[in-house]
Image (tube, rainbow, N blue to C red; front, side, top):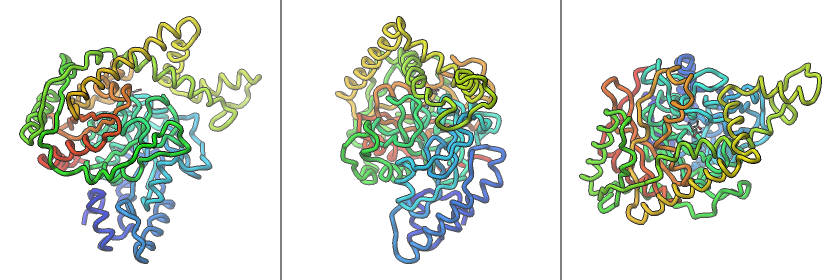
Length: 486
Ligand code: GLN
């Protein structure tokens, strides 16, 4: 049996029936990582010994009759932004190159408590700033469908690892699209939960009012399984919300008759790739055939989303990243003549260009005299964008859009033009500004064989509806069965 190609649901069925063993499954993935990740660079750290020990433990438990549920014995990756006790956690940055945290993030703890095995920490753009995973201190990740192209970002390591069958699933983070856009570029499923649904405790902060962790998987069912485990209120994260967590598996009814689907006209503007437009329109037609009630809607402030995001996110980042000063943890330069020099030199050497650009942008936007003109104004526009969604959700249950305006681009193609790079997230950013849940799933391939994704957005805390619609669509298409050539 080709163990690496299993989905979570297939593997867990076999594990539960003791037809395969957690150790064999983990070994198969570790071998595959060793074989091909040199080319892909989707892991910063591979936890060979740790994961084999954890798999042995899972195996003992299953043999002795303790079955912890659908993640028991499942090998997965995790974006290197989630701290993990006694395991190097870099956030893709030189400044944390040797940082070994003394505690687990809530997401890691919940996964390991449910019996999952973490095989490694996935590559990412430094501090999750980017749309291509080219901004990693540890080198770019490559797209498994075409090694010359980017996997998207910032959770590009996670999406690549899942698409290339190096782990059965991974957890990424999404501040402006970093789960959904790489999922779409790599032909896998990426779910960004509602802000507050999944604990941010131990998830290294980029822009605290936008960041949210969520699963990257091969199927919608697997995303539901993962969300069941990682969702929920956490007293250690004051922004996590005390809302009941439904059993998301129950939402996968394969029945969408009468579900009202809104298609925003602002998401089909000129500039969108014609093959993407065609694939998404075909997907919309299928949703209609399956009984969804499709109607055009308007989200009039969409055009301001990218500029609003690029004031708010860098502002929050400039404040969050002030803690990396060479004193508390992480990298420190040696030989500085004064304390000030030590701060300056540590940050100058420890951070990459994009991170510095964001810190400068954010510091400027927050500075006296500019605060009202930029930050405050951006917050007001954010409210308008949120209000657009509230109005739309009076009329529809789910919003359907392309995930990205373009297919995966060439490595290096946009590195010199940050503004071009920022536009990659034009369809994913509004969802973060509104705090909504969103999911990207495969909906086709371009003529050159590159994956295309479609996105579903839901009301706050209604992950159930987007999972339901995405699952119904997925069950009536075969995109998930295609594998990258690597
Ligand atoms: N690409 C966007 C940025 O660079 C979003 C990143 C993210 O979601 N973490 O900020």
